[in-house]
Length: 419
Picture 1 (tube, rainbow, N blue to C red):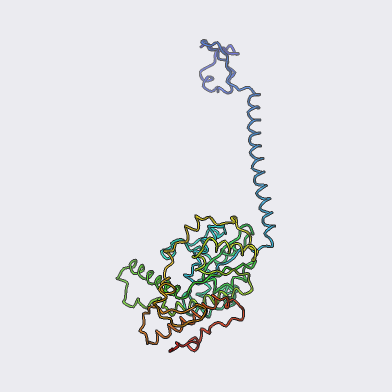
Picture 2 (picture 1 turned 180 degrees about the horizontal axis):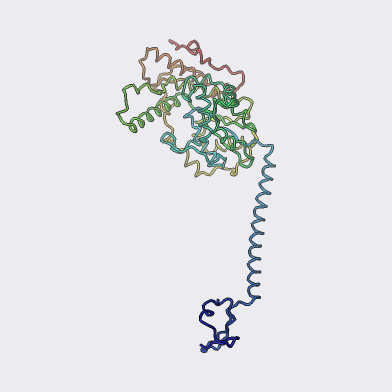
């Protein structure tokens, strides 16, 4: 290859090393092809490529702007349309009453919003609790400030106004409550679902903190089924705790620790259902039962959704009908424990009391001797719960003037008939 230079002087070695291809005006003559190639790109070509890139970037920016503008426009329109609607609802019901299954069907089936802070499934609720951790933890703080855990018999004396005052005066941290309110009081885009059995007790406190009143879905289950379920769950939890900690930590007195007896189970059943109905009085309510959901889940949850939308003016969920796949995934008859003793084998069981219209209290296996004082107290509490249950079945317990049992002096209210 032959090199020709505009300067006829022979360049020095240093000049050759310091000169760059981009700044050199050298013309290369290829002996094989006889073509001329310059190292610099023509300015017109550079400008053309820059123009094309600029147009492409501008095109992408225009598409992005249009997309986000439409999204923002739709969001604002949705908020305006939902301004006069109820932002969501709460599922109220006693522990072990099917509230998790019902909430799961509504969330997964119709798309009601729960947010991200969901409680994880556990051995005692394999399909999931459908509860927000922050709400549960805050309710626990409300209760503990008054020395009343969720399963304590002292829960009957919980004072919602006192809990609200604790929050105002800073006597509780309310850290979890702040997180919960950010979700419950956010913009009205998707209708929320909030579920925690403790809310039956603390609802009045939360109503003072919410921007808008929620609708209510109230559900209940047979008191004997609930009491048996509570007892068996506590026994399983105790067994797992022993296995985890080992026998070295056991003292021999564990049988009486945190035990939920049948009597306690009946007391809790009355307390939670009573407070749920009393505290939600005046709110738009939709009523259902655990049995109704199991008998025809697709039809029952569809009815609940429709009533929430039409009767209670709750923001419509994303889906109008529940997919059958969701129903099949959530409703498993094998998970409906403790049915035996309430309906199955009714012919062979002793009737403790007939409340009329087919509502009867059937006998059950007890840990106490038949004529012992503990057995009598257990039966009395059971009959008290059954009276409320039968009244709920007939729709009598939903009125404001319904006469609830005086739980503080329950021993004077019921006696076992000798006939």
